[in-house]
Every structure is written in structure tokens, then in C-alpha cells.
Image 1 (cartoon, rainbow, N blue to C red):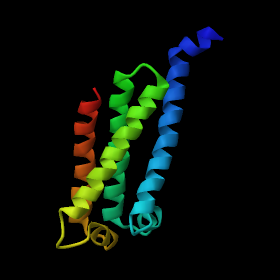
Image 2 (cartoon, helix red, strand yellow; image 1 turned 45 degrees about the vertical axis):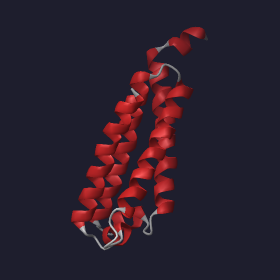
Image 3 (cartoon, one colour; image 1 turned 135 degrees about the vertical axis):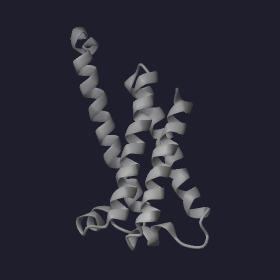
Length: 135
């Protein structure tokens, strides 16, 4: 049994499984805090929502990439990933706060692709900054 735990393939599968579950939970959290339903909007062809959601997916995955690289245990990796997600969520609220002339959620829901693109880039960019802090 010890050989199984030490197997790189087993560790990779375990890490992958944990990250996929965390990704689903974190996307559900983003769905909860936005005024639109991500998957309904994407199904209807809303490119702004697709870009913003894609940026969130990339951002979460990138944070976990850094966490996996710099932590030996699955629990520690998950803890840093959760912490990174919280920071990414704070970044989302900060973006909303720093644009008082319009509501980010409403613009994205209305398929404002410029706002969707900026939202995507912010998520991606912050994930690198958060990841650098993890390492």
C-alpha cells in the first residue's frame, strides 16, 4: 500500500481530483456572487461572460499550479489554493469597487466584451501575482 501512495501517477491523480473538485466549488462561489448565471449566459452566446468565466477558470488553475509546484502535501496544496482563490475573489470585488461609473456584472451580462476582456485579464494577471506569493 505504501508503494501506491508514493507512486507519481497516484499523486498526480489525487492532485488532479482535488483541483477539479475545488474548481467546481470555486466556480459555484463565483456564480453565487455574480448577478448573472454563467452557464446560461454562455449557452446563449454571451462572449463577455465566456471571457470572464474563462479568466476565472485559468486564474484558479494557475494558482493551483503554483501551489502544486511549491507544496509537498495534498492538504497544504489545497490550503494555499483556497487562500489564493479568496485573494482572487477579493480582486473581483476590488475591480467592481474601482469602477463606480458602471457595474461590472451588469456590463458583462449585457455582453460588453471590453469589460469581459478586462475581467479575464485581471483574473489571469492576479493569478500570477498570487502564485508568486505562494512560491
